[in-house]
Amino acid sequence: MKEITRLRRRLAQVGPRGRGARLPEDLREEIGAYSRARVAEGGRLREIALEVGVSRESVRRWISSSRRRRARPENCDDHATAEVVPVNVVSAEITDAVVVVTATGHRVEGLDVAGAAALLRALG
Picture 1 (tube, rainbow, N blue to C red):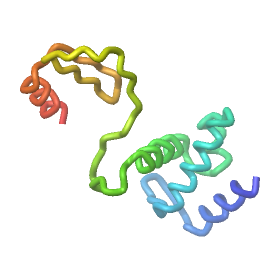
Picture 2 (picture 1 turned 180 degrees about the vertical axis):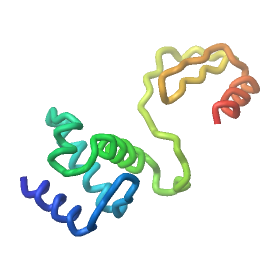
Picture 3 (picture 1 turned 135 degrees about the vertical axis):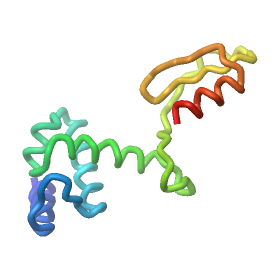
Picture 4 (picture 1 turned 60 degrees about the horizontal axis):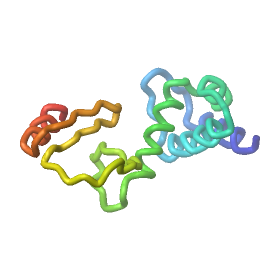
């Protein structure tokens, strides 16, 4: 409970906030870490947002962005958006076909390297 009191006190020190007002990055990261821990305990985003005193959407974004920062290697470009995720190798078959799996779970199989490169360019 001390953690939530400290976070709320820091929020109050920032001053008046409204829609679109940005909080200091270190405070957003702290709230993201606190929120991740609460979610791991079974907390819901809405109740966490009420505890902290920010919107549910802000809590969701800060949890997500702090996860990406933790997963990013130190020598990685600050503008990188790729997230490192674990994968399971199902088979070790060597083939010329490429499989592309997007972060949202879409899977495209049977492409050659040029086709995979074109798809990735098109997806941005």
